[in-house]
Image (tube, rainbow, N blue to C red):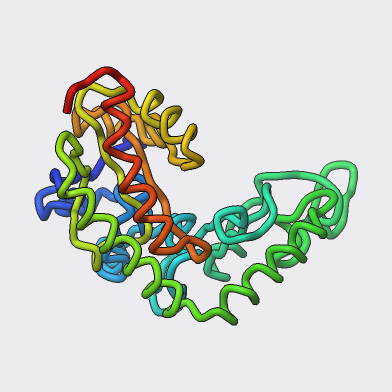
Length: 272
């Protein structure tokens, strides 16, 4: 197997040239529904349809999309869809892997242990029915119950309401950050293309220093390569800062962030 990459332009969009890499030789197309670096939404249905047009399996990473917007795997028509519990108010070490039944029935289990077998003989084994053949060993029952409660909570709030709230916060923050000198936003600055994530750099300040200084004001951001080193290398940005918003954030907190952000360079000794 050969691993090939679809690259992005400077605003974080897939290019037609790179989407054209999905061809008759392609067996699997894997991509994120929302980039955890850019915070940008992807044209999921279009990419899945392109994968299927060449007979490939489409795998969608929904870790960054599922907490922020409605998810309908049947409408996407994806073959696999995965998301994490801890990003959506659930417990750590929980998540969901969806797969189309026909594919799962044809697959061999990748973990062996209790409850994933049907019959065991000395020289042969038959596997249990779905989903049990992929659920070897003791299950994280309390984590699953907590994730179920988290999903109910988010659905009670309304995924459309969550998406609208994040767009309001993101729009307000982007407008403010554009007015601050020496701040460079990575990816699109169109809030309708994004979830509540804004990635940026500050001239002359390493992201770890920026995070430490903002932490002193009670502001938590993420700094580093965001588990996406190949993307950083492609963009020529080895490390960056990432501000993230969710249901519990307010416009007042965004204003506080915008007020303190210019102080980062001042604390590093810059005059402006």
